[in-house]
Amino acid sequence: MKISADTLKKFSEKKVAFIERMGLGVVESKPRYVKLKAPLEGNENHIGIMYAGALFTLAEVPGGALFATSFDTSKYYPIVKELSIRFRRPATTDVTIEMEMTTEEIERIQAQADENGKADYILEGEIKDASGEVVALSKGIYQIRAVAG
Image (tube, rainbow, N blue to C red; front, side):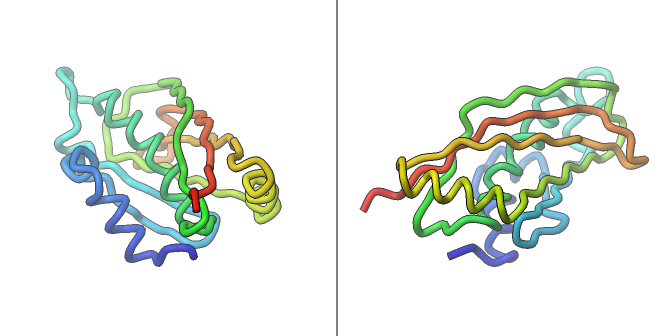
């Protein structure tokens, strides 16, 4: 069972209080694809650019959001195993990140999880400012695990 776009929006934006406070929002979601946004306002650091922790959070959340649009949430749950971020330039505007997976990749991951009880996968993202400039690059190692039952 994949969750609806409305449920994903509520879960991504409201489930974790920190994410709600930072104003992170779902711009678009569909099977195998998510686009999220974080506002500059309220997430500035001491010199007026986006705080590194806000950028990191924006890089991490799509892993769970993309999982929810792509995998059967009654059979599996996701965890993040590792996440790295490379800051390229200051973010002085709202920022977005888009991530997607192929059907083949999802099928491979599910087959491995069915066989082994878990499966790792890598998601890479580009955080972009309002003009489309890449302000940070992320690479996450995520894992789906089969729900015990």
